[in-house]
Image (cartoon, rainbow, N blue to C red; front, side):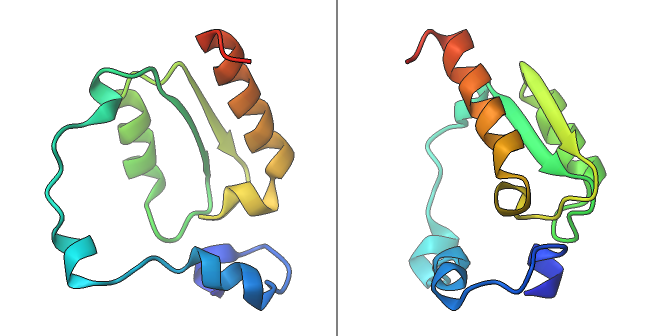
Length: 102
C-alpha cells in the first residue's frame, strides 16, 4: 500500500478494499472495442511521485490523448484523488464546464 498511496496517511481498510482491482482472468483478458481518448475530449491529472506508472508514461498518455488540460501534482502518488481531492475536483469541474455539463 505504501507504494501505491504514499504520502497518504494510514489508509482506512474500508477504502483500501475499494482500491483493489478485480484480478480475474476475464478482467485481464477482456477485449477493448476502441479507445475513448481518440474521440472524447480528455483532461488529465497525475502525481509526479507515482511509483506505479512512470511520469514519462503518464505525460505521453496525456499528450497522445490531446489533453485539454494536464495537471501534474507535485509530491502526489498514484492515488492523487485521495491525497489532493480539491485539485482533482477542480479539474473535473473545469472539464464539466468546458464540455457544457452542469
